[in-house]
Each structure stands twice: as structure tokens, then as C-alpha cells.
Picture 1: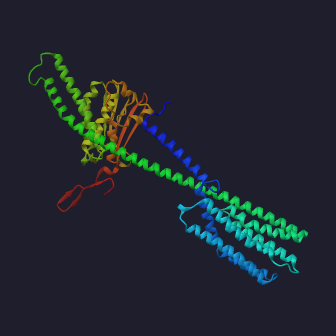
Picture 2: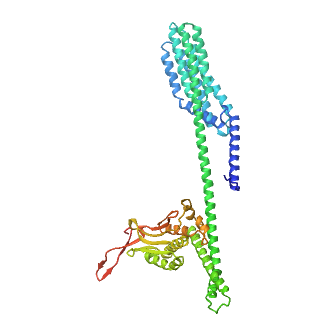
Picture 3: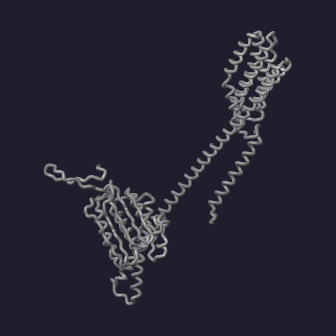
Length: 508
């Protein structure tokens, strides 16, 4: 098991630990400054929810109070009910003013404990105002009045519990005064019904306070989930920013690498051409015979090595141009069969020297192709060179040019060599990637042949596929799309001229 101890990995680990510690300290500070023991930011959201809910009922509560007063005036003198309604509305007004003051204040000045205390005070005043229903005069219809007081208490406790659910202490503050006064009045009056009503009043108060606390916990859970979502979004945005920055740095590094390769390739080719030229003159004995045969052999080796190095530099230059987006195609109508035949003739001597049978299977009836002749020639040479390099003596290579599906055109090179392990195919298709066989043979290159073929095919809008199996050989296929095939149409006579009109594969 390997452990990544690179500086970048260590910095990432330290950054994650620093963020974790910072988040833990921030959470602890939030809990210490919170009035509910959760988070100070949650307190603000909960109180804002409370204020919004209270203000949304600024007209509903007065209407409810007035309706209760009018209906109750059937059993109670109207003056008493109007007085009760006025007291309740004064408490309601105090609650509304406190909520508006909170919403108009700046969040920077928010103090959870002070604001919670203010809410509890005004809610207590509101609850005391509602509890004055217990002071209604007892008439001959005492039992009916007791039931009315109990019903009004339940309505008030229920309405206030729903409105103040975000702050449970406010629910407790506005419900306790009414439960104590009305419950005490019912017990004082005596009677089984009154005792039952008093017990139900206490039970209703406990139930609605429990409900308010349950809703409060649910609201906190909602806030926690929202905070986690916001944190996740923030981390994703931060990761995206870092990824974009890393991508820009990688692109800049890639451009710098491509420029370096292009510059160095140009600088190296000039003296290398001189080495190749002079070594060729010496090995050919143009200026006279070389007395020592070893010197002639050395000059031939220098020439061959120079040619190999020049090919490598050319590959590096082509790859850097392609990666930098500066490899321009010089497109024209070409014959794929003619290019393949030229490449076959160039490499046939090399294949014959290794005892390899090079079989050509060309479809002479293929129409012309719209593409870059130099680039396509490089594709054929790279594929054939690779096949010759890794095919053993007395092997066989089939070089095929034919039409594929949907009238596309394809170049196929298949050998009966040792093949490539499946887990190494991605490696040999990557830049500078070499399989285990290439590392063992003396004819190893830079691992740029197939990647260059891939990129040239991408520039032509085609595809490149490699199929290989150990001990069964390898087949590589370069496919050009139908849109690049120039299909010949029937001759068209126009007056004195006979025009040969071509159309592309897309009939444009």
C-alpha cells in the first residue's frame, strides 16, 4: 500500500484539518452565544419566523377577539366583553410592535438573549390580557359562563401556540396566565363539571406547549438541513473554483510545455540536419575512401541515430502543435489507396529484412477523400512502423484500405505478433506510454506514434480503434467519416461542356 507524501497532498490534508477545526470553533461559539443552546444564527432565523407568523395574523387575532366578544355578549354584559377585548387588543398591539421593531433592526445588532427576553415579556402581557376572561361577572347562568370562559381560553391558547411555535418560551408565557386564572376560577366555583373543565384546561395547555416545542425542534432540523445544504453548495463552489484554477494552471503549463518543445525541436533540428548530412557524406565516401572500415561503420551508425533522433523530434513537434491547437490541416482531394501504396513501398524493404510478409489489400475503386495528405501519410507510416517493429520474424502483416459502414473509408493494419495485454492498451494510447513489450525490445521509441495517429484522426473527425489479444496479434483501424468521402455522380452535359460533378458524403 503506497502513501501519497507529496507536498500537494500534505497541503490538502492540512487545509482540510484547518477547515474542520475552524468549523468546530465556530459551532462552539455559536452555541455559547445562543439562547436556545443550538446556534446563534438559528436563533435569529427562528425569531424572524416567529415575528413573520405573528405579523401575518395581525388582523386575524383582532377579528377573532371581536367575534368572541360579540357572541359572548349574549350571556355577559357587553361592557365587560368590550373591556376584555380592549385589554387583549392592547397586548396584541404590543406583540405586533415588538415584532416590527425586531424586523426593522439590523441583524448585526441582534442579541438572542435580549430579544428572547423582550418577546417573553410582551407575550406574558398578551397572555395576562387574554386571562382577564376569568374576571367576567357570574350571573344566573353561571354554568354557561364557566363553559364560555373555558372555551375562550382554549381558543386563545391554541391560536397563540400556533403563532408563537418558533419560540417555545413565548408559547409558555402567553398560555400560563390564562390557564392559572381560568383553571383557578373553575376550581373555586366547585362542581364536578368545573373540576373537569379545569383539568382539561391544564391538559390543553400542556398539549399545546408540547406541540409548540415539537414544531420548534422540527424548525431547527429544517434550519440544520438548510445550513448543511448551503455549506455543501459553498464547498462545491469552492471546489469548482479550485478546479478551474488548477485547470487554468494545467493549461498554462501545457502551453508552456508545447512552446518549449516547439522551440527546442526547431533549435535541435538545425545542427541535427548537419550531422545527418555530413555522416551520410562520410558513410557514402563521397569525398574519398575511408581507410579504416570501423570509421565507415561509425559514420553509418551516426547517420542512422541522427535519422532516428530527427524522427523523434518531428513527432514531438507534431504532438506539441496538436496539443497547442496549432496543427492546421492542408485539406484537398486525395486518394487513400495511392497514399497507402506509397507507404507500403517505403516500408516493404524494412519488413522484408525482418522476414515479415507485408500483404496489401486495397480497394482500388474507392472514391477520393477530403483530407490532409501529409497527415494521412503519417498515419499510415506510424501504423505500419509499429506493426513491423513488434511483429517477430516470419510474421505476417495485412495492410488494408477499404470502405466501411455507411460509406466511410478505413485503414486497417493487422499483425500476428505477441499482442498487447488488455490492461496496457490505455497506456500505449497515451503520450509517451509504452507497453511491457516495448520496454523489453531494443527498438523502443518515445511512445508517440499511436497518440499522434489518434489526434490526427480527431482533427479529421474520424475515429481510431485498437484491438489486441495476447498471442493472437493486434489490429488497429483508422476510420474517416462519410462526410469526407467525395462520391462521384453521373456526368452532367451542359451545352458544349461535359462536367464531372462531385458531391461530398453529406450531399452538400
